[in-house]
Length: 397
Image: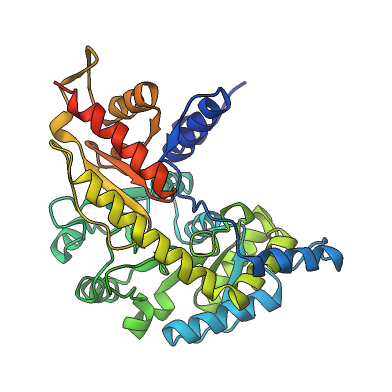
């Protein structure tokens, strides 16, 4: 069987691969603790479950409009007006998709022609690069490891070419948990307007911000960006509804019309029952969100505290999302159990095979020499998993 160049050049998702391997080992009876998946361990809120059951009982099992049920689109628009003071027409400027991931791909599909360049700020989520490439575009990587994991205006401007069309911004970020401050976002906004660019603004973790910081929506910060920005959000992270696969996008009418047509040919409507469940969550799960936020914050503090006790590694304390990005470069080139640690991928393989802990290599996020831990785990798993990790690092020579 002959495959397309597109398929042959596509890299698998490292996070899904790690998570899948960890689950397979668990099925074999291995005592695996997985810090790999970006998935809350909580059950979906009762309001979502009740709404889903009611929808099933009412027979809401047929196709819906391709861009989502009107009731959910209206609730998303209300949420954005309430939270950010932004007004979007629910019927023309809001799309419900089968998760945030396909909505990003659909947006890229409507903006990117072959050869077009899209800026990515590394470390970056694993799917951005592959989705740009699938659309025929060229990802341009801007390394932020030397600037507190935030892009500087000078680094952005230096990366621009006549082929630059736009950028993807993720705040709070995966994998670092950095929350973009106002001054960084305003500097980016000025450059976007100056150079006639667009933004895909991935704010899927916007409800998970800690230490008194506030998530800033870039359109609410600078209204000039309203017609240049696609906002991406969803139910997965804040509402612990990963498996339901509901995302939403908001943007200017002309762009959303094209993205809606793209979705109509790609996935058609998201699952009907899942849409009603998401509506239930948006209307009635605010207390659940607050409880989960409190638990994540406690876990964050515990994981950071335990990791900081380990020599030869460093980290930047995350201020958002539910990840800790750990610098293991001092461990590379050394040996563990008689084997050389060639790179971060090898390090993660050794951690899984020897200590039964699943973590994701930084190279998956475009930054080799780091590993990502998720703290979407119980306190007991965090304590035991970091204990095993500490044992491993202590025996590296």
